[in-house]
Length: 218
Image (cartoon, rainbow, N blue to C red; front, side, top):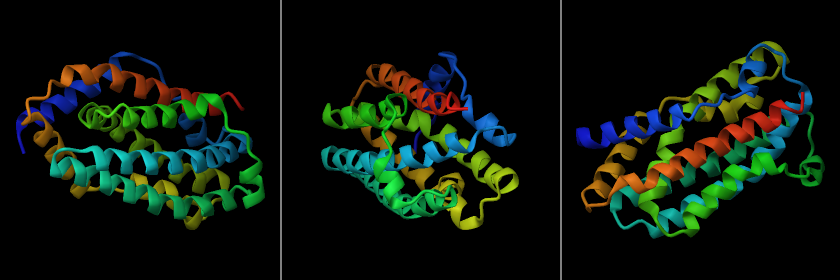
């Protein structure tokens, strides 16, 4: 894999960091100061998000023109399916039943993120979508690691209830290599990545909106 792909990924990540903004929920969870209502809402909102992202990644895999790109999106979609199975244990750890999840009214500030991922899939430009999604992957894994540890320490959640976060927090050298191979493949087509930077910034902003909407619950 080329240095060009690595340098591009670092450049787009630096670009979204320069936009500023901070995740207000994860530090509260880390210190045990987030309300249980916020944590319950996190579980309920993720039930909508994971299902939506699963479909979006499958759509992007179908649109992909390069084999490594197609494999990346298909692999990430499969991961969403595995995560969904673990999400039920997180909800149960929060004291939520299937009826509670069904009755939950999704929060607009939380659902902007998956809605934009779906828009990226519907726009039919899997190259731009690839870079925008990769720009935000690293932060998500770090957030999940912090939350998984804090739920055990401060909220009494067991390993099963934290498995959803452990899944995303676990290092995946194979996925990292696949993501760079996918980026290499699309760069080799002559694609200009500059057009993907606005999408990366928007996706990052919508992710912060997700966390901060939950933080506002208390």
